[in-house]
Structures are given as structure tokens and as C-alpha cells.
Amino acid sequence: IDMDTIEVSNLNRQFLFRQSHVGQSKAKVARDAVLKFRPKINITSYHANVKDPDFNVDFFKQFNVVLNGLDNLDARRHVNRLCLAADVPLVESGTTGFLGQVI
Image (cartoon, rainbow, N blue to C red):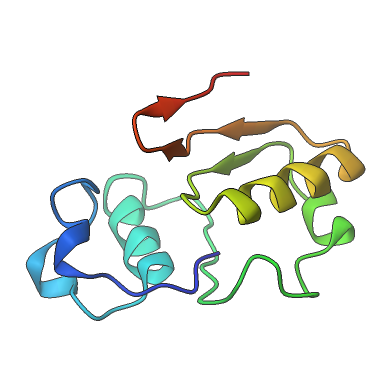
């Protein structure tokens, strides 16, 4: 779930994106890139805001684990709250500048 599109500045820090992807949905390009090396898995990409009402507790309950790579602190806290409410483990990999956190 990501509402952003790929910018040139993303290319030096996100290994799934290439120059040809600039302007495209981050969620869709990431899905397509992962499927190239794991073609038999099922991934649904959402070009949307993770804080949209569609992504509620019931949405998160369908997962065994949630992997999070958001750089927006408010969105990261939102996903954390939903995972807690859904009783789903969250693997957080976002950073804040030079700060990071492992739980």
C-alpha cells in the first residue's frame, strides 16, 4: 500500500526501482519486481493511502505478519496501532533520518 510514485531521488536508496520506473506507482513496481524472483507468490498492490478507511483492522486481520517500510512517522504509527488491534505481528523497517528502531 503506497500512494506515492517513484521519483529520481528514490533510485539511490530503493533497490527495486530503476530509471524507467520514474513516475509509476511504487506499490505496483515493487510488486512486479518481487514477482520476478518469486513468481509463484500472491501479491496485491494498492496505489492508495494506508490511512484510508478500507485498510482497517479487519483488513489487517487477514495477514499472518505485516512488513512495513514507511518513511512517514504518522503512517507508521497508524499501521502499528492497526496491527496491535488486529493482533498481527509487525516487522518495522522504516527509518527517521539516521535513526532506526528494531522491536
